[in-house]
Image (cartoon, one colour):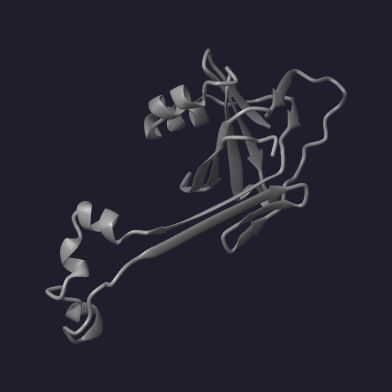
Length: 170
């Protein structure tokens, strides 16, 4: 597996079947360090972690977890610069041929379930593959406190999901 470590965190890339996607687990070194990681984590730090990973033999203990969330995005999208799309002055005639449509709301729901059988994310299913190694263990990666996870598509590096598990023991 690919592994990264610095003074604040450890990160591990767990490839899925056929290595088309991976899960990145970002684990603070301190058991109460998730807030510090979140406050400093951005796309540049993500890219640095990915670029600095090295192939390493790892003993992984990762709990099963399931999380889901849903959001109505009308207010957020309006605030981000799309208020007209949600008003009667919206003009979607270029797509529909008439000017009778506007957006009422946008709903987003995401779900991820990680277990021994694999990962189910939204309508996408992937299978965990474990790499066989000899009994020599170089690094321990024991996920027993809050952590971040990212699922990325490997060809482009596109982040598909990102989340935080607060209590991995439940």
